[in-house]
Amino acid sequence: MSLFDNILNAFWVGGLICVLGQILIDKTKLMPGRILVIYVCAGCILGAVGIYGILVDFAGAGATVPLTGFGYNLAKGVMEEIDSTGFLGIFTGGLKSAAGGIAGAVLFSWLAACVFEPKGK
Image 1 (tube, one colour):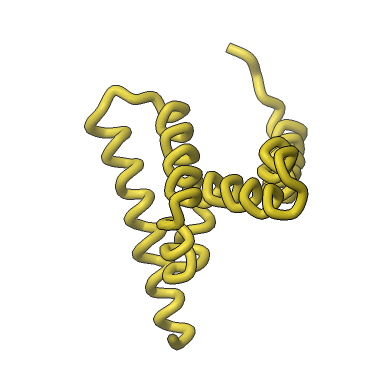
Image 2 (cartoon, helix red, strand yellow; image 1 turned 30 degrees about the vertical axis):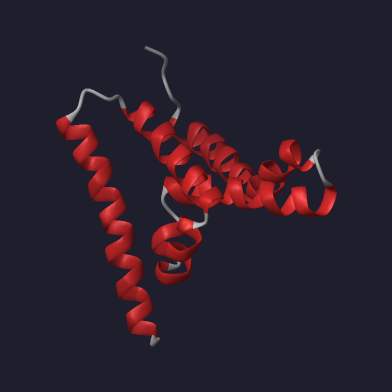
């Protein structure tokens, strides 16, 4: 596939995932936090079954950047860690595979809090 095809696939798959989230926000009474949990769990389940890996191979960043990609990353890390260390991989695999993303989220959240002075309600 050409670079343009890769970009196009990432764009429409990532956009479709976001559109589904927007439909959930607009048409249901689900709060954004619950939709976040649904997306992460869906990515984890689809990754464990092997479906999400096919989507990642096809769409690249369009499938790994949204929250479903985080769930997929957790499931993939657990499966890899179980293969290498056994039962304890259930507890350590997800955190090992997602450590960079989690650390980045914490760091940039802290920086945003320092810059913008959040106020409690």
